[in-house]
Image (cartoon, rainbow, N blue to C red; front, side, top):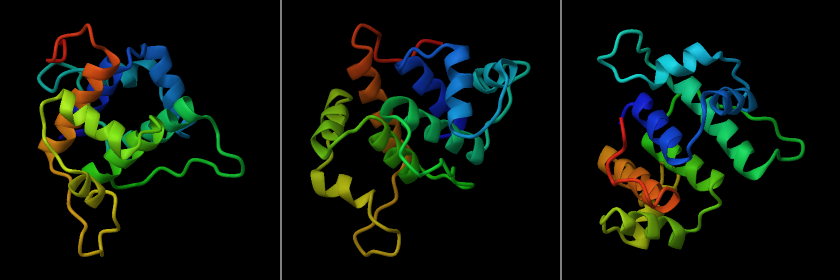
Length: 160
C-alpha cells in the first residue's frame, strides 16, 4: 500500500480533522501545515496531490501513538526513516493497545482469515526464521477491519 492510502484510511477511520492531523504530526516531531496535510490526503490523480514519504508517515504514526496512549516518560519520538507494512502494523497495534485477539477480531470483521501464529510472525525480528513480510493485502484488510470496528455505521468501502 502506498503511504497516502494509509494516511487517508486512518483519517477516515478515526474521523480526524485537518487540525487534528496537524497536531498529530507535531506530536511525532514533524511540523506541517494544513495545506500539506490536505495535499497528502488528495487522491493521486487530483491536482495538487503530493506523496507522503516514509519519514513523514512515520512521524504521523509516532504522533498517533502519543495521541492514543500518551507521552512515555523519558522517551521522545524517534520516527523511522524507512517504513514497511510490518512497521505500520506494529505502530497501529501499539497506538490502539491491541492484543493478538483484538487484531484477529479486526481481521475477522474484514472477512480475512489469519491464524495467531501467522499474525505473530509479522512482529518478529527480520533475521528470525519465523519472520514474515506483511503484504499489502494483509495491511489493507487490517485497516478495513479497523474501519468496521471504529466506524461501524460507515460502509465497508472508504468514502472518497
